[in-house]
Image (cartoon, rainbow over all chains, first blue to last red; front, top):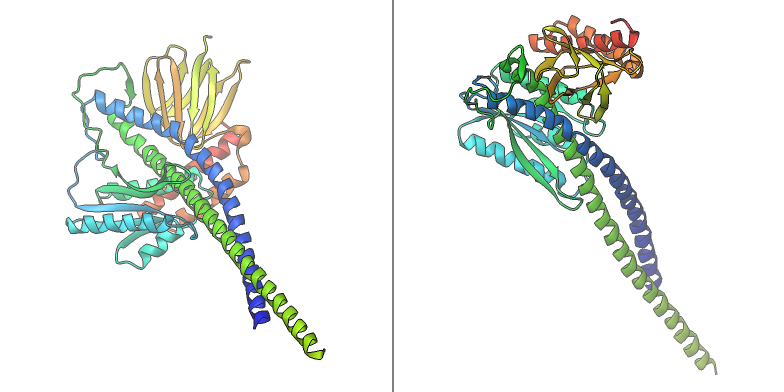
Length: 288
Length: 135
C-alpha cells in the first residue's frame, strides 16, 4: 500500500509543478505587459488635458448651445462596457461586468431604455447572453489599440448620438489604482455636464475660428476618442495587474502544495524503509 | 524670424516639443499661417499636411488627422488623433486602408457607414499625399 501511495504523491507533485510553471510564466508575461500598458496610460494624459481645457475655455467664455450639452429627453442610455479579452485574471472581469449589469438594471428600473456597446471578448460574451440591445461589439482590440480604433468607436458613438439613438453615454471600465488594487468605475461621458454655457462676458481674447460652437463641437470626436483610448488602456493595465496578482498567488499556492506533498512523500518513503527493515530483522530472527 | 514654442500632442505620446519660426495648418476654412506673437486663437484642424518651418528655412511636413490648434501666450499647441512625419509614414498601410475604405464606399451601406468610410478614405489619402511629397 505504501508504494502505491508514494506513486500517487509523486504524480501529484509533478502535476502541481507543471501547473506552477505555467502560472509563473503567465505572471512574468503579465508584469511585462503591465509595464508597457502603464507607460501608454501615462502618455495619453496630455492629449486629453489639452482637449478638455479648450472645451472648458469655450464653455466658460461664451453663451452657446451644443447638442452635446443639452439635457436628456429620450430616456435612452448607452453603456460602453470595457472588460478583458482573456480570463485567469482573478476577479477582474467579474467585477467590472457585475458593475455594468448593476448600472444597466438601475437605469431600467428608472425607466430608461438601455443600449450597450461592448469592448473586449469577455464583455461581448457576457452581454450576448443577456437581454440587452447590443449595438456594436469590439473584441480583441485592447492589447494593440491604436488611435484609429478608438476614433472609430468614438465616431460610431457620436453619429448614433447625433441621430438620436440615445441621449446619454456612460462608460464602465476598470481603473488602475495601484499594482494591487484595480477598481471598476462608472463614468458619464455625454452630455458634457460640467460644461454649462457661460455668462457671455468674454473673458479671454481668444479668437475661435469660425465660432466657439464649431470649435466645441469639432472637438467632441477628439474628446470622445481621448476618453475611450484612455479608458481602454487603463482597463488593459488593470487586467494585467489583476492577472499578475492572481498568478502570483497561484504560484505561491503551488509552492505550498509542493512543499506539503514532498513532506508526505518523504514520510511515506521513510515509513516504507522502516517497515522493510523490521521485516528483514524479524525474518532473520526467525531463521536463527 | 522670431521663433515660438510648438507642441504637438497625440493620445499615444507628445509627438513634438520644440521651437519653430513658422507653422502652416489647415482649418475647415483653409490654410492658416502662424508666426511668433500670433493673437490667441483656437480652431479645428482637418486631415491635412502640417508644415513646420525648420532652422534652415525648409519645411518639415507631417500628416495630421482631425484635431485642433490653439495659440496662447505665444505658445502653439496642436492636438490631433494621429500625426506622422512625411518620411515616417507607412505607405503600405496607408494604401491598404485606402483600398479598404474604397471597397466599403462601393458597398453602398447605410449613410452612417458611408460617412465613416469617407472619413477613413480622407485620412488615408492625406497620408499618401504627404508621404508622396505632393502638397
